[in-house]
Structure formats: C-alpha cells, structure tokens
Length: 356
Ligand code: COI
Image (cartoon, rainbow, N blue to C red; front, side, top):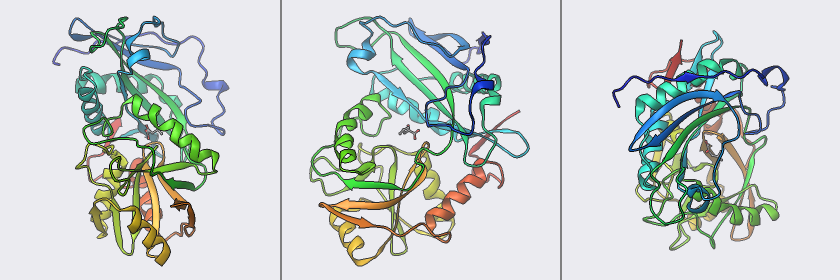
C-alpha cells in the first residue's frame, strides 16, 4: 500500500487514566482510552481512525460470530528509564498477523497501515504505558469478518482494530501443567500455526478439565500419536534437559511461531547454549523427570513472558520442579530479554522500535 495513511482522530472527553489503579492491574481487564480502526470494503482498506474505546455495533448475522473468521496478535510496548516508548518486535507481529490472515482467507494488513495505526494509537495513549519494572502495555491488533451473511464463504468486509491494556504479569506465580493425551489443539494441515480465534475456543474445554484437577494449563501433544509435546495453551514450551534447550520445531503446521520463542532461541544460541528445535516425547520427558535430568521447564509468550513451570503431570503422576534459582537459564534469559525491552541494554538485533 503506497497511499498516504490519513488517520482521523477523535479523542475521548472522559479519560479513564486518573481513575485507573496502576498498582492492581489484572491481565486484560483494564483497557486504555482509544482504539485504532480500519475497514476493509470493495477490496481495500479505508477509513483509518483513532476513536475512544467503545462497543462496536454488529448485526446478529455477523460472519465472525458464526464461522470464526478472526485472527489476532499480542505484542508489547515498554517505557525506558528516559521515558521513551519502546515497542518490541512489531515487524514480526505484523508478518505473523498476515500469515494467520492468509490461512483464514482474511485480507492482509499492509505494513504501513499496521505501523502507522499502531504509532498513532500509542502517541495518543502514551500515558497508559506503565513505567515500572515488570509492567508494560499489551497491544492487541486483530482482524475479523464483518459481512452479514450466513452462507459459507470468506467475508467481503473486515475490520482491523488495535486496542491496548496496561498489564503486569500474566501468571503471578509459577505454572503447573498436565500433559494432555486425549484432546488435541491442532493437527497437520490445520490452523494450529495461526493465531486464529478458534484455536483458543477449542482449547478451553480440555483446559477447564485440567483446571478442575488443580493444574493451571495443559501441555498439548500431537493429534496422531499423542507422543510429541507441542505447546501450552497460552505459550510455547521449552525444556532444559542436561545442558540442552529443547523446544518444538516449526516444521509442522501445529506450532505457533512465537516471537518470544524466537527471541529466546536467538539469545540462547548467542549465550553458547546447546539448542535443539525438535519434539521432546512424553516418554523422554517422563524419563528426564524421573532421572532428574530435566533441569528447567518454562513457557514463552508475549503475555506470559518467561513463565517458570513448577510442576508437570505426566501419565497421572505429579513431578515437582526445583525453584528457579538466579543462575538458572530461564532466569538469565528473562533478565536479558527485559534489559533489551526496557532499553537498559543495547538492542543489537533490531528488535526495538523507538517512538519519538
Ligand atoms: C499472547 O501471549 O499475546 C497471547 O495472545 C496469549 C494469550 C494467552 C493472551
């Protein structure tokens, strides 16, 4: 798209900023004042605007409500000590949104529309970016179908929206997980690699079953053999077995190409860690837990950041993992990533977009 991005601005007259308790932020519950919106109709994106965050008008026949043609992203902006706004790997999120969109027959969002909309929104809602360690502004870009039509075909109309939420930690404490060997999240040829709304809907029921048993999340296995560990519902999953870091590869169509996943792998290789992108089997995991060779397990994700796993249930047996000591790999990698995200360390990877 080479046309000028002309964004119409309507500012709120009732900001929630002064009544928001930034000391008690629950993930996703506090939404900032404004949102960016663009409409897709007649084959192009039009009508770019920033408006007060408010309910949308949708007809009951809206295609997304019935057939789930919707994809989204999760990304974060941080405040440096000097007060600059730093957005982490926005280009990677823009590309992944379009990979997901393609799979769902949703039109791509051009890079300049994504970036200009994002920058304008963050300029207007700049004061919503928390300026304390461990806090950030979670950014939720998403695209969904808006045709009012009950036949099955891709919609002709869509909305692209970005809104934001100031957040602290997604998981307040270490996470407990159970290996799932009955239900499936994704299959070869399916939509598992995409950040599609329906992937999350389908995982709610199996997750609710393990939550009733006292676990926070499940560890998905492949849909055919239920032997290969794939990912968790809210994050990619990594294991340190002996001195090697393992995570599922992106060679199947079942794994979300996590941007935190990629950042961790990049930093791990630079730190001299052995890295293997291959499936760890349930049997291998069980053996490593039994023998004590499993040193660490953690999730990686934009919302979850680096989420330490304190307990894994495999084949109905609970295995407790050690506390996360300061010399653990996951602790060091969290420190390193945070240093880059908050601008305390030089960004040698081109991961940070700084807003003036
Ligand atoms: C993210 O990490 O951005 C996600 O979309 C995961 C979701 C659990 C909030």
